[in-house]
Image 1 (cartoon, rainbow, N blue to C red):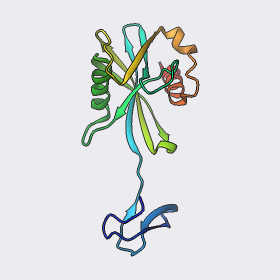
Image 2 (image 1 turned 90 degrees about the vertical axis):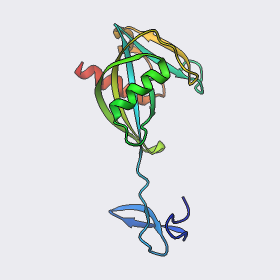
Image 3 (image 1 turned 60 degrees about the horizontal axis):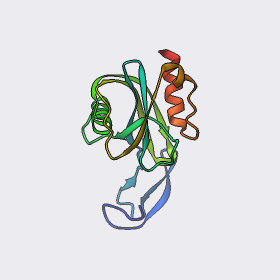
Image 4 (image 1 turned 135 degrees about the horizontal axis):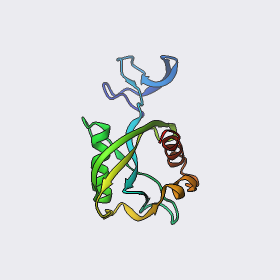
Length: 160
């Protein structure tokens, strides 16, 4: 963002609340807070198996959690129920909160769950393929560079 949304003047970097933020150069009061976008993510469990998904835009072999953005006014648990149905065609049963994870490089805050679901997975066009793992396979699964999935699984296993 280069210009003020209120008066159109150029933005300039200023120290506000001990952080450098972009603010109106005309001092009209506008500050671009650059708040992170909330995203939900889930490790999906069907019976005794866990589902990992490969996004259609990812290289072969990269599997992770399902995820999606919160809609305006939507609660995180409702969002992950919606994503479970939209991305996998599964019926949502319950969600167990695992943790929240800031991802500064993408300006996102990830709200992660383990979701229990039922049904036959029918992935939508966002998902290229699915991988089913037992709990033992999940414990040793190498997510490679997908560190978020590693952290969520590790945190969930530490309290499960």
